[in-house]
Length: 325
Image (cartoon, rainbow, N blue to C red; front, side, top):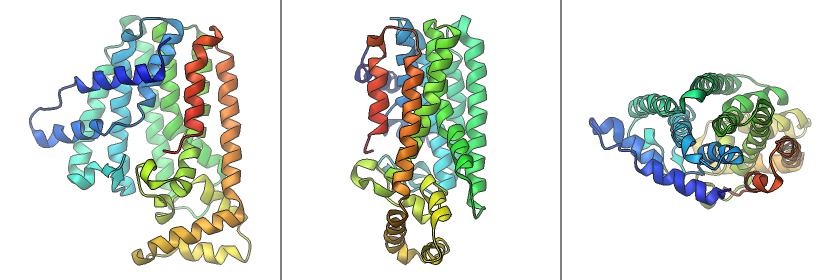
């Protein structure tokens, strides 16, 4: 079994071989830029790790893995425009370094390229992989739309939020695992257990992201701390704060949510974080993370391969759960 580090090194090496030095440079240069910023490479790594559970030949899944990584980065270009995010992985986002139109068009090309790479999946697995990839791509758009819709609503139920992040984040992790398992020769039950593992670890992963946006270290997190607070993003933390706020806390919370004074941004982050601490929503989020993490490990336990082959996935799940970036 290859380690996570060995697999991510392989992925990085293969990504670097892709030639984005094409004309018009204004279209392709941003693609090379965003892919050069690094990232955790979790999705392609999961593809190859799942394949490796059932086959020593992980190279048969490399093109599919690259397609999933290119697709993921395409979604980030468009998400950053919609969120008006200035920083991604510690560097200016594409729409800030260039402009919105460039980020849209370069993202479109990345989506096309992602399908071109997924289409290189070995022939006997091509149709189910493409079907799952297309289903996943549509679900991610559904999740993003829910996220946008939530911005216009005063209240969002916790269950609605969890469904949104399942679609927006978790399904691509699940797709990566199931796709890799198929290519490696997994049976139906094992492929499904890995898909479910991906869903549950993806939910825990996004809840951790919500926490890091408030309680993380900006130097390691790679983007501004408190960004979700500044844009009133309906995270699991804010949803529970709105539900738990008493007559004493609610006016203050609502006052900050309706604040439009950019000069008070630091005070807003500090004040809302203090309210989160008072209302105990950090612990609520951590408990739900633990719930999904436990479910994910139970799914992995059900995969019928020798225990030593699953250790790298267990270590990665733990790393995602307890990460600081």
